[in-house]
Amino acid sequence: MGRHVICRAGELQPGEVRIVEAEKRSIGIFNIRGDFYALRNTCPHKGAPLCRGIITGLVVSDEPLQMQMTRNGEVLRCPWHGWEFDITTGRSVYNPHRMLVKTYDVAVEQMVEDDPSVETYPVQVEEEFLVLYI
Image 1 (spheres, rainbow, N blue to C red):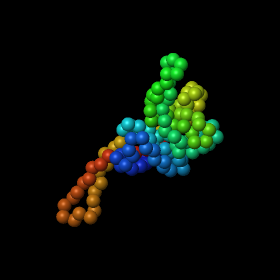
Image 2 (cartoon, helix red, strand yellow):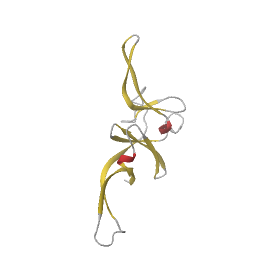
Image 3 (cartoon, rainbow, N blue to C red):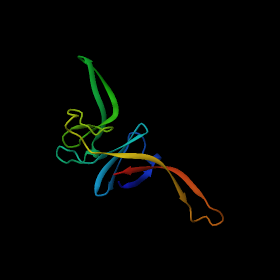
């Protein structure tokens, strides 16, 4: 399993996506309300750059003319043909049992770095970084 440090966790704000190349794959890293998810940046329908699509939610209705948006920010709509996928699972909204996008593990980890520019005493900086596992 490959380990790839992407960025500091604070650099990817809620509602944002960052597309990265890792091990010859294009992958979108999403921040959904502080939780991080990673999807392959390829729509299984026709190969579109899926992670460049619109991040939206689901419209549900309990009765005619009564609609509401749920799961706002958790659904990704393909920019070419509008196919929708759940960012948190990679599963298709319309056919979740047969159509899905590859997902990857993302973790927020503490990193400790030595600063070689300080000569008089050792300095360590601890920050949280996003790490993608393939």
